[in-house]
Image (cartoon, rainbow, N blue to C red; front, side, top):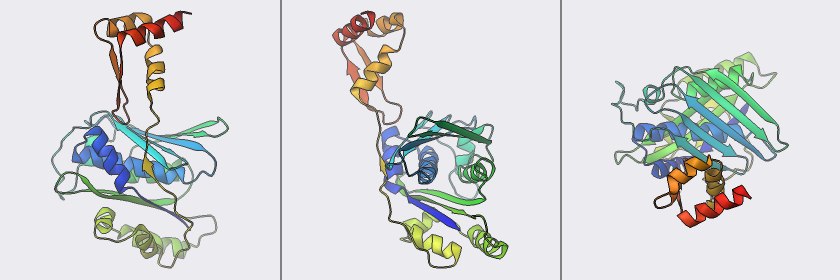
Amino acid sequence: MRVIVAQTRETALKAQKAHKASPVAAAALGRLLTAAALLAADFKDSALVRIEVNGKGPIGRVVAEARTNGRLRAKVENPQVSLPLRSDGKLAVGHAVGNNGLFKVTREEHNGLIYQGQVELVNGEIGQDFAQYYTLSEQIPSAVALGVLVGRDSWVQAAGGMVVQALPGSSTYVVDGIADRFSRLEHISHRLAEGDSLEQLAEEVVGTHLDWFSPESLSYHCECNRSRSLELLASLPREEIHELTKDQGVEVVCHYCRTAYRFSPDEVERLLDRAAD
């Protein structure tokens, strides 16, 4: 068996604060960030993993990225969406995301090669969709648990995830036992909030002590900067740039961290002159 776990509370909380996300949007962001972190653990060399989900729900498109150095970031189209709780008292993530769409994964490797895979959404809850991606696209039978707990103050209180995979040669008896225990693993986010570690939960599921590799740090980190924002502005048609900047300059806002970069009319004019040259 192979087990990967990711503790993502701080990352999910920073994503929520950056986007001023509602509880249900924060849960969707946190789950997708956790899935991206788990996928990125497969790579030893420098690589980028991007997961995109658009189930035609009110939250719109959700994207999460993870680099092999542990840097994560995410964006959501409609972060302020607010929905009633489900009948069981849980956040309606599946309703917010929707299930009429695809779970897309793009992997950009250090050598420049790009691989893409996608599967149809199961229910928009992210966890089962992620498990289906592993099973159908990666051809690896996997059990997945993703959880984000939002507290009474509407901020992320706990977040994390686990993947348990059956490697070639695994006995049916062992796999069946793990599947049964995994199905009884409820409210992973609540267990984390109560102080249980993901390592404890994984060993509870597998039924034995596990030997863990050294942990790797995760953090919410955006790749944007002022120079890249100016390059993005320069890619627009000249007429559109003139229209945007004719009064008092222009502001470029990053979709991943909501940082705003302000450019004066003089800066934009110099940009246009360089482009013309």
